[in-house]
Image (tube, rainbow, N blue to C red):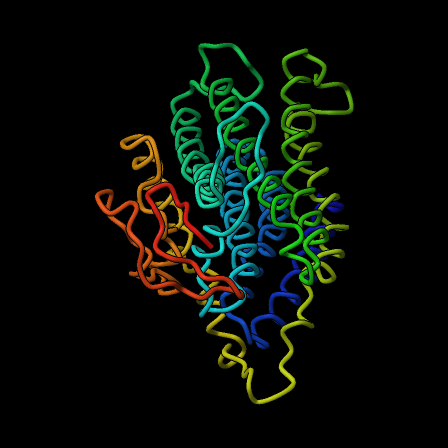
Amino acid sequence: MIISGACTALVVLVMFSLMFWHAIHLSKPREQIKIMKICILLPLYTVTSFLSICFPRAYTFLAPWLEVFQAVALGSFFLLLCEFISKDSATEIDIFFVAFEAPQKKGKSHITGLEWFRKQWIAIFQYPIVALGVAITTDITQAAGIYCLESNEPYFAHLWLTIISIISVAFAVMSVLNFYRGLSQCLSGHKPLSKLLAFKLIVGLSFLERIIFAILRTANTLNPTAKLSYADVNIGIPNLIICLQMVPFALFFPYAYSVSPYLSVDSYHPYHGGFLGVNAWIGLFNPMEILRATAFAFGMAAELRKDGAIERAGDTGYYARQGHGGNPSLYVSPGQSHARGPAQEFQGAYVPLLDKDGRGTF
């Protein structure tokens, strides 16, 4: 408790200092609020782990909500990469992916940039819904006495909820990595590798540790001794490890997510944080962005199931509905799939009206 408490205090101090500096120097709210949502993951991790050590009976109820925090941070990280690509509010991210040459897999049919983008979006934003469902189900089954943390027998909920959670996070993490690899050149100038490592190592380590401790419990390796109680073995040690490993990540975050690129040096980029950054703190705890992004992911999945293909080539949906895109000239009905119309200038190229598969002459 002493060691984990000290680590928690240090992590909270460092991360909230970084978030405070972003809040009072809020020159690019769309990027910096997402950075703050990523940064708050570390204090949430350490505080929850510390509380689990202090109150081991509450651990089973608290632990699954770490996955929910992680899912929100992962979605915010993905949206942050999208913001880096869109450059500013005037740039159409949908047009970018219409012109983007997506990575192709050998032996697979050709996939357009827009379709590739949508598939990454769906794979990432299924995670918050699955994590929330697993957290609620865990709490219910634990209260009903049919969860059983230390058992992987099929008649307890623990095994099935663990499998569902691992599959969900694996899909989300792989999609973010694919997105980064496909756009690494476009993201240069934003320290993308350091941002990726700072966040992905947290997710990757927690993912790996869950698997390791699940295997150890199944193999009956973690057993109480004369020196270690049941709570020490099954709750104390795993949560102490989390508190310890968050310290170096907290020290690395001010470099990876530095506030220096957002320090305004002229009157053309004023700060928008308000008194003590109150606007940024309100945005930090506003769940609507993640909710809209998740709802759009399920809307896209339903559309793909219904039509078997993307029919509206110019609408990435989320950014269009946020007021950052949605040029009407890009929408073509199936009956007009080969029509041509006014061109849209984009980064030195001209994008005419496209067919339903997102293809056109540039």
